[in-house]
Image (cartoon, helix red, strand yellow):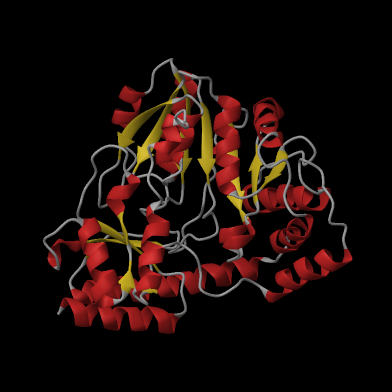
Length: 384
């Protein structure tokens, strides 16, 4: 038999699947994979169920149903002051990962350089390589994960096609400050590159902070694509409903990639997400408050056990330095606590394509409070 694709064949099974299966095998509480343990708003699930029965259940528009695309445009206007033409600047995808793939397949040519900040979400590098791009890695440093402007300036060249920005950032929980985004925008303009912005955690940002989309900065409107996800905003990660927003000239090649990937997304789910994006401010405020409470609990509990807890501006995740409780590597530690403490976590080193730190571990706090409390009891007992 001839060899399969060398890029994707070189990757092992994703660590999220590995650790989730290990958690199931050992009956462990899964604080590794980033999903809530309760489903999102009942009224949205009811809209999806009713729409499934009432129909239609045939192919909707490749771009997404008009109701959802209008809701996305209204949402971005309401929260960020972005004026989008829903007919030409908004496209629905089957999750944010598909949106990322469409952006990379649509925008880069083989040999183009793509700048990635690490640690980074695990699909970025494989998708860049499969599209024929050349990843250029710029590492960030704990504990504050400040945007490394000088290193970015050195990494960018006139061969660079685009940069991927994730804010709030998985796995670090970093949300970029306004001054960091201004510096980033200046670099994008100077080197004439696109920015692909993964903003799926836009509504999961804490401590009174505000999310600033890069697309709103001067000069960035025509070179930035903004990716959002209903899975994170409504705790419905299994629905896989995402979207991409951008100026027509930028979005058009992304649309071409989308039409040959999934083409479309279940219409009943789209209808429910449209209703979700139209929810009033109190829903989003309560979502943030609930997760912030859980973050604070988990951060304190982990600190009391002996971990050095890093700052968390947003997302579902708290990152800790394990050296106060364990002398080994992060992967070894995660396997140990899964089998012995019955609590699963994710080693941060897997979010690096280059050699990364081996002392950082990510815990997910988007769980019921009683689940978090039981997990901390188990962890404290095992590590004491």
